[in-house]
Length: 190
Image (cartoon, rainbow, N blue to C red; front, side):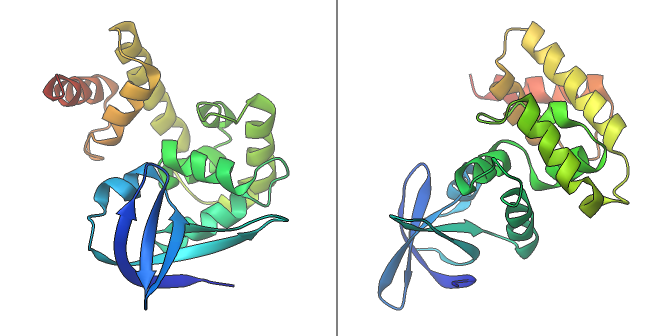
């Protein structure tokens, strides 16, 4: 198994990067957040998961070992494949996924394309015990949900609201303050 690669980014696409390691170009599927951070020619290290299928060998890359471990936990749930697991981590921050699972907030996971109510509940049911002891989940999600609903009522899409909230500093916990900061972020894009 290929567990880690260190090399130079030679190409970026919307779903993957090509990492040149000692003259060999590896196609590594990553989240859009990772692609945004990468610069062509940058030297990086990625933790990888090699998915072996009947007709393909696909590499999935992560910036931290903890994110790789979360990805590996997600794909142990029946109905969740590597692409769906990567999709979960692309839409929701890894620490938010951990909080959602530990607090039993399956509804939060249904915001991800390809994850319906049944799959989200299955993820929570099968993985909840692995994240015991993570605190603060319920209040965190209520504030984020309130902020997303408020931004949607102002005409922003759920994805726009979610992306803006990801950029709000973590020390801001009040829902109305989150909305104010998110509006500043969304306003700067216009």
